Amino acid sequence: MATYSIKINNETRQVDVDPDTPLLWVLRDNLNLVGTKYGCGIAQCGACTVHMNGDPIRSCSVPISRIDGASITTIEGLSENTSHPLQKAWQEHDVPQCGYCQAGQIMSAAALLKSNASPSDEEIDKAMHGNICRCASYTKIKAAIKSASK
Ligand code: FES
Ligand code: FES
Image 1 (cartoon, rainbow, N blue to C red):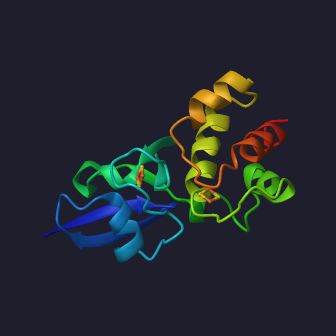
Image 2: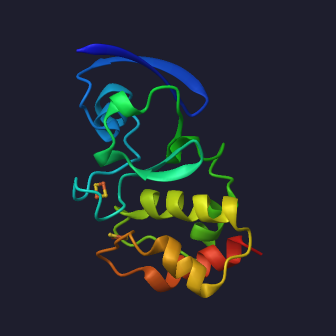
Image 3: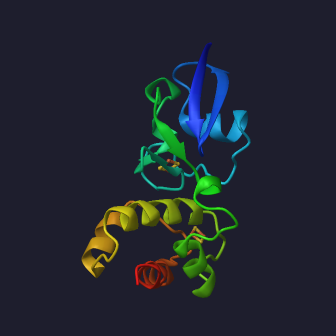
């Protein structure tokens, strides 16, 4: 076990965990930030996507020991009162079906729009390629991203 001080959603938190504990489990089990989901555990589905220094990462595959000094944003910290343009667009387009993948989808989309405010269809496809939705809500996801980018 070791003590790590990490910045999560603009708040510094301390956790006592094994160095190889994936960030996903620190978020969910130690910090009760359960909006970030476990899907595959091997960086293949995107359900666990959060931002590290603004970039999307698969939190299931990043050990806490690699987070040192980084700023992490989860779906809970994306906005206050779900006011991010993507969260509003998600509601307008009624995107979620079962909802399980959606936090990861939104976090990937948010990283895209931060670096490219008006992405093309191809750029959206490329950025969202690794986020799997078992309910196949891809058409609505894309429509919501385009809507939020306007
Ligand atoms: S749970 Fe992390 S990518 Fe699937
Ligand atoms: S909404 Fe069900 S997995 Fe995406």
